[in-house]
Amino acid sequence: MPGMGELSTIRDILMGKQMNDYERQFSDISNRFKTMEEEFQSRLQQMEADYDKRVKEIEQEMLDRFEKLEKQLVDNVTNLDNKLRKTSKEDRNRLGKMLAKVSKQLLDE
Image (cartoon, rainbow, N blue to C red; front, side):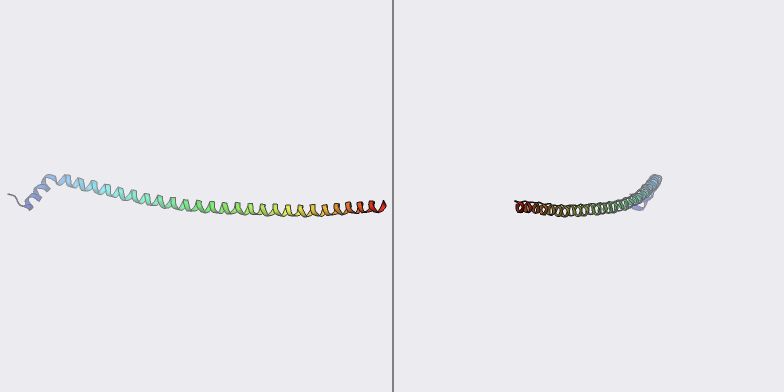
């Protein structure tokens, strides 16, 4: 009965070339996998950077829009307040004139 060393030698003789081919193929596959993993990581990092940049752009755009809306709101409130004051002043003037007219008519009668 052959010993373990002899079996190993026989296996090397019979399968040596195939084993070398398998090891080379495995090495090639392993190298391709590492390359693909590196490319994936690179692309993922680029996507994260692009995403972060876009989020910051959107945040700034939203802030700009809110500031613009706030300014419009303040301007509209100021305009309405001015119109109300002007209208109230005009109404008081008209009311005063009407009361003076009524008072004059009462005195004249």
